Image 1 (spheres, helix red, strand yellow):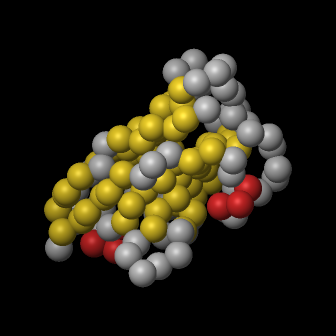
Image 2: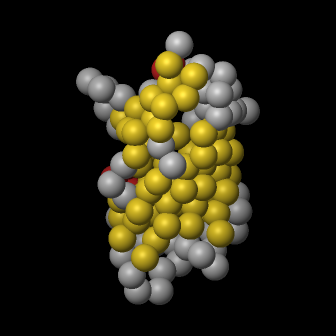
Length: 123
């Protein structure tokens, strides 16, 4: 299973950007998919997650500004980002769990990772 993230870029503060992450390979249905981000010099940070049933979870730092969604038929997860701030600048990674483990915050709970896409928010 491979995850391919896309949609990063440069945007001004207050702007919007959408990321997508498509799973390819053998038939894959993840119980939970998520987005993480890593800013220069910082640890990887959980951003949002969505279950196969559509339950969504958000970090406090992005709640109300970001929306995660998924298309189970296309095995794709999306992250819509609005009201972006310079502190949102990071490489964004999508990830997927192979089995339900009851934890969506810990990076170690995810089995598959995308290559990352850079989001830069200018002030």
